[in-house]
Length: 392
Image: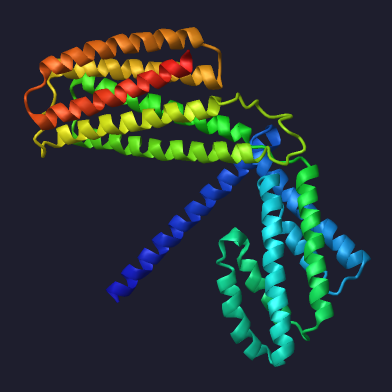
């Protein structure tokens, strides 16, 4: 009885947590709806894409089902709906792949169905082949529609060439409708997201370096705090990778887009590529610094905790690096402050040169300790060089 009540209480606690999660999700959804209504942004882009998908399906059904009374009219709105993609280019590319997959599955299923005259036997023969065909790399993520197209044929009341031909025609019509709606009705652009993600990555790099610098300057850091810094540094690397993916996505949204760049922030040549390179070096440098600090704090490695004087000088370098990154972010994604950036980079180089001399004088003959400091200095030099090149 006790275990039963304990299990019941655990289940009730699980339900309570689930409802809290639901309320939190509903609140987040309400906030997203308010942001979509208030002004341009990702939430409004997603809402528009949803409306466009519904519009494409409605148009395809109105023509194929209501007006033409096509025998398999449902195929047209189904294909139109799934082809309202995140970018016009992706909509076209996926449309061609999906049509090829549907055609392959439909033709194969029709031929086998007419030959065997038995649905169960035809499925046993066709579906394994269709699933294997779906793995063909040229069909990409649309390969699954080979098996779907085959199922639509084999589960119909009768397998005929005319019905299969009509099904392919409806799929083609739906693809045309979906691609056309995506290209003509507010084509998607994602450069706002690109700028925001890059700015967030730069801000996070600045905040981590400032936190580490303050901790080293006060000489009050411990293993737990150093571990938290390192976890943030690892998340920064993932944030930079997300920024890289978003940059590629934003550029893809311009391919085949009838709006071009109208209404979107300008793409400043290779500016986003330069920002990704700088943020890459910032993520690598930050991870290296926090890893070294964490290992020194743990006390389970030969490398000793740096002396307070050396730690304070390195903290000054980290603080200036964070300041340079802040100016870099503002220069690339906000207010113009190129002069401040150049001044910050110049000070960073001077501090780095002094730190290099101090580290050489302060380190012992321990090869592990010397290698650790050498790696940190190499990363620091590369980051300073990238900031200098980007701020020139």
